[in-house]
Amino acid sequence: MSYQTPAKRSGRAVDTARIGSGLKLLVALVGLMWLSEVVDTATQGALDQYGIISREPRGLIGILTAPFLHLGFGHLISNTLPLVTLGALIAVSGAARLFAVTAIVTVIGGFGTWLISPPNTITIGASGLVFGYASYLILRGLFNRRLGQVLLGIIVVMVWGSALLGGLLPQDGISWQGHLFGGIAGVLAAWVLADDKQQRVK
Image (cartoon, rainbow, N blue to C red; front, side, top):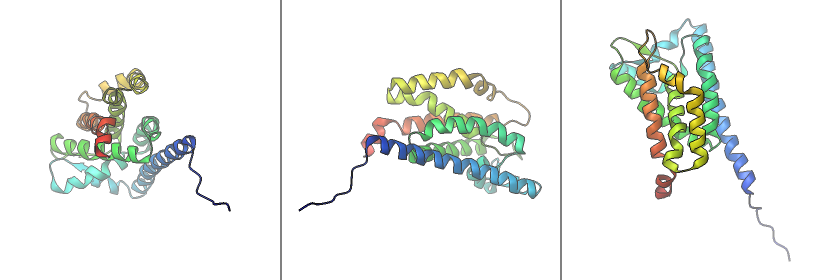
């Protein structure tokens, strides 16, 4: 007599599925940004009012919506390129990890932006998310004590370091507050999601 049992998925199959799920989530996030900008352009900027309005209760909703809103396609393109690159490096760890990092950076970074931005300003754009992704990748290896991740973090610094530092300088029309708190939130994400802490949870 013979029996049939479900075949165990090989490690390579599991890795492929995990990477695929992460990349699908990244595509969905970026796709939503582009769809939002298409709608915003068609409605002559009607969606921009849902950005982060500093220290206004009605502006709190912008913490969740601001990363998906941009001031034109030029602004969106400038954020899309680094977002896709850095996001893909996180996405290889799976959709759950990408979602967790994105959620932490969006909420913590957005709240900090809401708290200290100049009065009567609206902050929109995914650059805070870009800064969060970058700082997460830079420090992840130190918290996990993994040489490969440390080396990847060094590469991120070499490629984007000057742009990241430049983004923290006060400039008219640029939210250095969003960049700063996005970066801080990325550091927090690297610490919260470190391997040793995840093992304790399990």
